[in-house]
Length: 122
Image 1 (cartoon, one colour):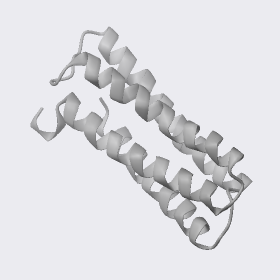
Image 2 (tube, helix red, strand yellow; image 1 turned 90 degrees about the horizontal axis):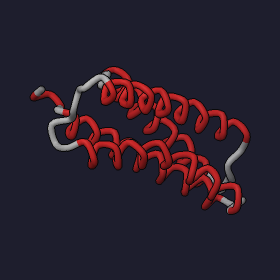
Image 3 (cartoon, one colour; image 1 turned 45 degrees about the vertical axis):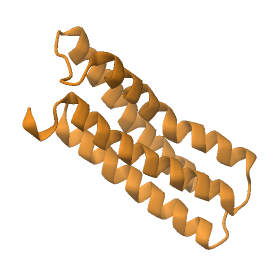
Image 4 (cartoon, helix red, strand yellow; image 1 turned 90 degrees about the vertical axis):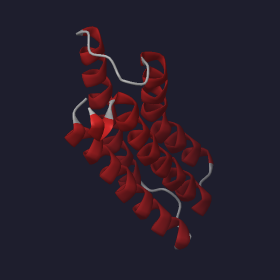
């Protein structure tokens, strides 16, 4: 996997979490600008998904197992879009809080993906 992409996704997810968390604290629902941020993070994750599939198809394997890696990869791809859709149903501050929580989950999933692939020890 591309370490720089994993790092970029983690940083972008944490920035999105801080942004939406601040909006939740200010009693603001998710706005169009928040959805643009979610789209950027989602595009980064989709790029990671493509890279991972290409590497797996090319014969590279994660150290801790392919099945668990693919499961985490799919979870990472679904985290932000799922919370984005949930925030559409919850048009209060809690919609923003939901997106913030989903973005934190994504950052944690990225750390786990890095570890499963081989991390710094590879």
